[in-house]
Length: 355
Ligand SMILES: *Cc1c(COP(=O)(O)O)cnc(C)c1O
Image 1 (cartoon, rainbow, N blue to C red):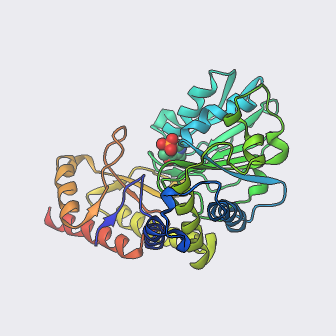
Image 2 (cartoon, rainbow, N blue to C red; image 1 turned 90 degrees about the horizontal axis):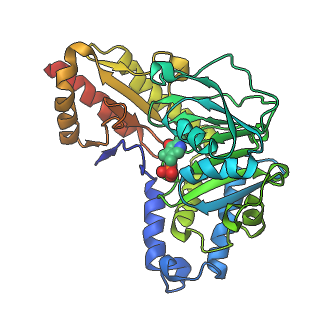
């Protein structure tokens, strides 16, 4: 068995893979592949409606919100948000590479207020005690910093519409959706193959588009047409639905949270007590449950390559840190079984004992 620690595209439940294979062979007993049928067919319409309904159910989304599925990655939302909503000023919390990408795009459309940044310490913490400007058009955060390994667990009270990039921690814990004007998540970290991004958006917020935008950038039109203005990414939406069915069957996002805590606690504990390794994120409260970043202590730095070599021999795949950070990263998404966490812990202990 391979232990898959890739950050994205990343591990999916076996259920999602199996159901996808079935549907690619013969979708719903139609005798046709899911890949080869019209997105306007009744069978696919049902998939789209179920994906919307399941998202609402799993995240307990209140009335007055729409769920849409759009092509392109989460990065498309980096520009689409300011395009639609930045009239004068967008406020941002700069906690890493992904949010700084969103900030860069927003500057194309107007003033950007970086409310706080952890760039001074290579994004190894979540800034605290910042004030969200009441005159901003919106406040955007990234709840889980996939590359650096920090996570925001709080659903902030914001005086302006709150937006969160939850690409890498969506469905890993309950979220108070009522606090957000918009949540978006690229699929390939925690729920489906690449190619689709989920957008949860408050209906009253999407009315507020501040300039004319092209049809496919228009959230309201996308919502009205049930994400089918043009051909949606049919296959990843199907796979997303299967993952959501799996999450529900496993006990929902509360159960996912429990497992995420158990996985992360186990790995961080081993790293904390290691003579050789050290977690990148010093404050336990800021540490991501989804992307555990760590490094060799300086005195063992020359052993980094040897660790990655052994990890491959022990079937632990995808442990190299992001190229911009270096070191190591164990992504421990929803579908990762405890068995794989055990394998990682055994790998670390074996390596330490050998050196
Ligand atoms: C991966 C990632 C993105 C970018 O997603 P794409 O689908 O590649 O555009 C954005 N935000 C976060 C938090 C991510 O992890």
